[in-house]
Structure formats: C-alpha cells, structure tokens
Image (cartoon, rainbow, N blue to C red; front, side, top):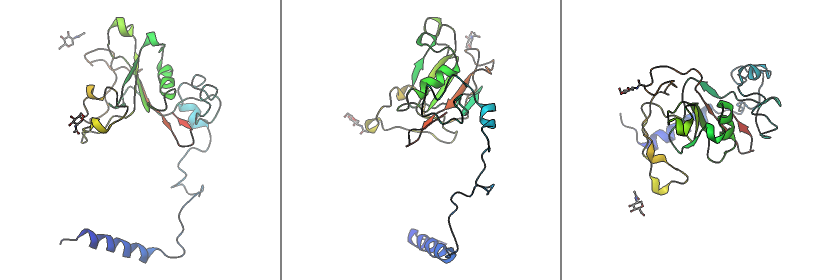
Length: 203
Ligand SMILES: *[C@@H]1O[C@H](CO)[C@@H](O)[C@H](O)[C@H]1NC(C)=O
Ligand SMILES: *[C@@H]1O[C@H](CO)[C@@H](O)[C@H](O)[C@H]1NC(C)=O
C-alpha cells in the first residue's frame, strides 16, 4: 500500500488530536518521577568520578558547571580517543601541556572553537613532542561507523585543517604507547566540553 506524504501527515494530525485530551499535561519538573529524574541526588557521584579537581576550578573558569569550587571534569573517556576530525589544534609539552588536565583546560579556554580534546601519544618526534603525550583540540567528536561526511568547504567557516583528516566514521580508537598501536595506553584520555547559551561550561 502506498501512502502519499499528505495522507501520512493528516493521519498523524488526526491521531494526535484524538489522544490529546484536556487532562493531558506535559511533564515539566516532576523530581519524583524516576523516569525523568535519573541524576545522582548529591554532588558525591561527581566528586568521585571527576578528574582534574582543584586544577579545573570555578576560580579559573567562573562559569564551570561543577557542584563545588573544587571543580573537575566528568565527561571523559580513559584509554580511548573519542575526538573527531573537524578543526585541529596541536599543543605539546613545549606549549605548556604537562598532563591531561592542562589539555582539558586548553579546550575550556577556547569555547568558540573547541568541544573535545585528547591527551595521548601522537609520536610527532622528540623535537616536537619531547616524547611525551600531547594535546589535540577539535570541534567535533568521532563519528560512527556507518556515517561518512563530505564537507562543502566553500560554505564552511573556521574549519582549519579539515582536509588533513579522513571523514569516515568508525569505532573510537584506543590510545597507544607505541607508534604501531600494539601497546594500549591506559593513561591516554579524551573528553568533551560544551558551553550553553547561558555561558555555562560543562566538561
Ligand atoms: C568553490 O569556490 C571556488 C573558488 O571560488 C570555485 O571555483 C568552486 O567551483 C567552488 N566549488 C563549489 C563546489 O561550489
Ligand atoms: C612499526 O611498523 C613498521 C611497519 O610494519 C615497521 O617498519 C617498524 O619497524 C615498526 N616500528 C616499531 C617501533 O616497532
């Protein structure tokens, strides 16, 4: 059976008017509903899971959305690189990146261009990376396997070195200790950052 778009639309509209009675109200702020209020009730869970406490603080980032002045980031992925390909800023030990918290902070410092960061070995060579893990900042996360993006660069703004990266999706790669990706690096870590329209920063 073939439905035209118009037929389907009118069927949906009819069905929704039939079910929408005067008693229906939209869920708004029902904290007692466990299907809505799925979040931990205290700051404890955040405190236990957060990295970079006392380094990424509200003192340093006044709009940081963290439950206490101690701060910290909970949106992180140890041992995998969940970053994407769109725009890329490389920062190294010589640029002041000594640890993953410096990397997350570098992303929070750039709310107009950065939403995700990775601290891992990139094997850029001792002259560049001092043989240490480095920090790369991106504006998009890894895309999944069945998605491949092709960018229309003429209409794009701020894309930087987008052309250097493959745009094909895949499972998020692990981080490694060696250039041939044979030894997993459990201390490689990536993370997500976002800023909302109120200016609050989440990490
Ligand atoms: C992009 O811009 C260049 C230079 O203006 C033009 O030659 C090219 O045809 C454009 N490509 C597309 C896909 O619009
Ligand atoms: C990495 O793999 C390449 C290509 O197989 C090989 O030539 C090279 O020796 C390997 N490097 C190390 C450090 O194992």
